[in-house]
Image 1: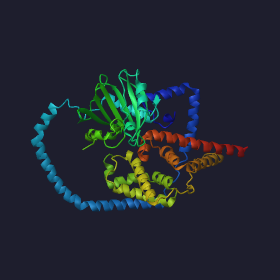
Image 2: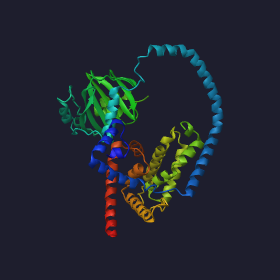
Image 3: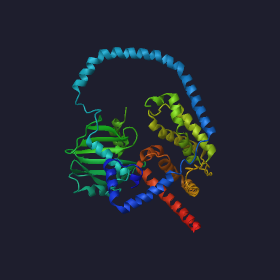
Image 4: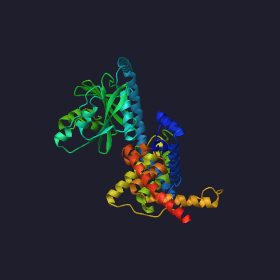
Length: 281
Length: 180
């Protein structure tokens, strides 16, 4: 109901809540009460208004800033214009010379996976990550123990999940915490979802059989004999790959390509050269 | 408007539209009108000089809130200053003049109570209520401003509203007793 009141629901979820509210009197009563409360809060604003004197000061600041920025830029702009014209002319000549080569490369690489749209598995992983972080999808089991989570998946998914236990065995400072797991539906099968947290930020690992999902799309990066596919979906960094019969998706909002999230399975110093190629150049 | 914000004149005009929202947020952060004015000027100055201006007007407000929050955190780090408490501004809206004067009075009273309740919330709760319920940012936009996950936004907002409800129901009970 909170997500509904905050206009955070879309599509099917929104329709479901709206349909429920027409049928359920007690939920409709709760909604009315919450709406009344939020209306009172939302109507009490604005709490503060900038005085006319302050507004004038800011306007002056913006005008002065504009003048000084324009003045500082003008001689440079003139010089840049001349240089820019030469660059454009050179680029045009180069383009004419290279055009046949470019056309031939495009024609011969039409099935190249780089820079294509994300796979449905990557999209599902990103969507699951969002729903988990919004509290719309609860974890079915909560534990910080990789062994317990691995055991929980046995007989629930048609493949074996063995989460590494690097942190405990290395005695290193904990860089991330394991939060729990749940099952998620994908292509009429169950996939395994594992939730982590690093520096207060959530990381999701989704695993399924490689007969169900093949990584594809996005930017392709090779490392240690594996091919990783990197996508940015709804502001999230999604890395998908296949290894030994399983396909993985790692989702986070960490920096760059989110390659730091790889340490949930590769925390050792020996794995640094494994993560390194995923960094943007 | 897509490329418009690249131009300084259009940017200045668009940025000025958010002055009240930004001043309100500056008051939320500083709890002091002088400091809020300084923070507001600092924010506009940084925004004017920034090279990474957003392309569209729809992102401008959130972008400026992020600048303001970072500028404030920098100041606090340097000065090691804690938040200060000040009275609310007396910029009351008079409401619809056709309303019954008693209703106007009650509404004004209620608004005052709600404002006071918001102001007396702990800093983190007050900030999130302002961002969501007064400024109307989405969970994802708030997560960007506060540099935290959207899940944290949701749980913190829930706790803040819970606290606010408790305060307001205590006030309503008192008001009811007084009326009886």
